[in-house]
Image (tube, rainbow, N blue to C red):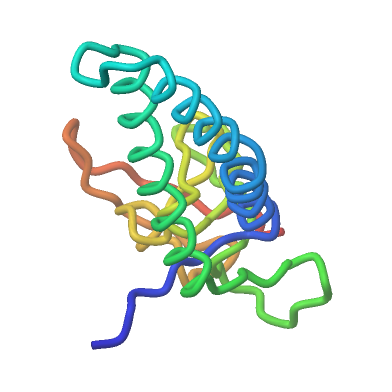
Length: 157
């Protein structure tokens, strides 16, 4: 079975690599040293520092493994500012949409990078799915808990 692809912008990929470097080059070695010092304190059964360090090391090792797997399947989202001929909404597009007369700008990103608070929506979200492939001037309808919401695409960057 083929691994699921993770779509990331260059910034998102840089953040993952930065976290990986921090964990492998700084935090893990510091923890291994802390664990060794705790082990040297004697009785491990009652050594809270030893158990805390082991638990944290286990968490960090798990995150390192997860990041290594993610980095194997990352697909970089092309930068749309580099003269794309397509005028439709794609993964990586910045889209200005109008809702009830109010304009909002959203970035369409991979699900791993989605952050609604930062106006980054996943291409897998209801709004993201509705926008993909649409052109400036088109309207999209999205079913929301409050009912249908109609968005008009004002511009694509």
